[in-house]
Length: 454
Image 1 (spheres, rainbow, N blue to C red):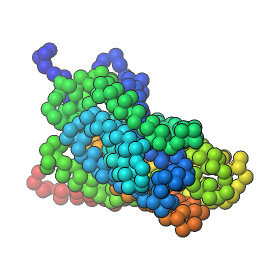
Image 2: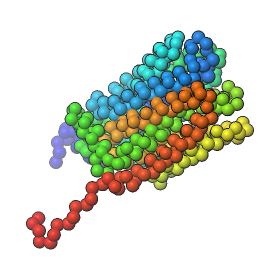
Image 3: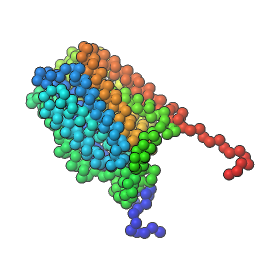
Image 4: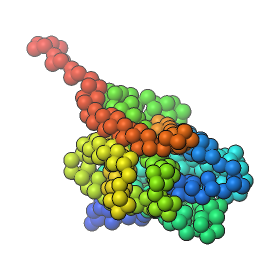
């Protein structure tokens, strides 16, 4: 019989009388939702105010430079995502998440103060470092705390906040920028440091798996009990130390994942090229297609509204049919929507096409993360998702750069074709993941001959 004063054993069931449901983990989901809301706001604010910035002679911004700066932002995200996936297993989820929020708030302040493209680009790079670190942490936290077999829906619910933040940024671009100037929109980007950081620091629990890995067994069990989760077992805990960080990366190429990992990276590349390319350049591309300035910026609001609906649909559908099938189909539908947007349709019909494209566009990428959750076990989750998002950020670098290059050459319409091709490639990559997992598994050992020594 165990000592009543001893810490609870890992692997024990959740606290009696409570069930592990969305309600039991709602505080964690709500805090991560808030953090990602500000992530979506900061990412989309650049596209929302870009037409106003291009019209500001004092800033000296050109379409080509604007695309390059968009790439600096996403290059910072790449570095942040790659570093955070392993750093958070060492330092813990909460302190790294709070640091990420403070970084992108500081970057927004630098942008608001900038008088030329150089300092403005530095501010966007700094913001990118924080934004890149935030997403893998929130995704891994939500997947860890989510009820069993509901990870895809939990991921979809989390990512509705990204689009709510994008809609808020667009609202700021439609109201603050015309009345007070684009700088005030970036000053609004300092809000996360004031609102979200204190709440996260005070209320967000640490990952039970990370606590267990640090030897804080009683704390890990207490957090699990508080949220009616199963207590973590050693297999759920990331390996500590420098060797552990290297082992976590090498584990992404273990049997069963060695071929799936590069396919997930490619699908994430395509998805993030679409997400950041569209978020940055949709207003300008639609404006070049002959729509008015107000309508062009409004399209960004509409596509993010479609994104919220899409997350809810994709999450529930993926929990039933699997995230790989949903992501592949969503990528194909995104390609079709991009081609339709390249034709000059009547305004009312264009709004419908933009909204429907938003339903598929953003959740295609998010279901790549849900698919990664099924490829990597709990101990590798943060590192695996960190690298999927990190390598995918190269697509987020290419998307804004590609849009800027096409715009600078007067070929804005080709952007729709490029985005359609990215959707087709993303569908192919994610669709091959199940086959890659089967190929990568080691062959079963042959049975021992009859009479052989045991």
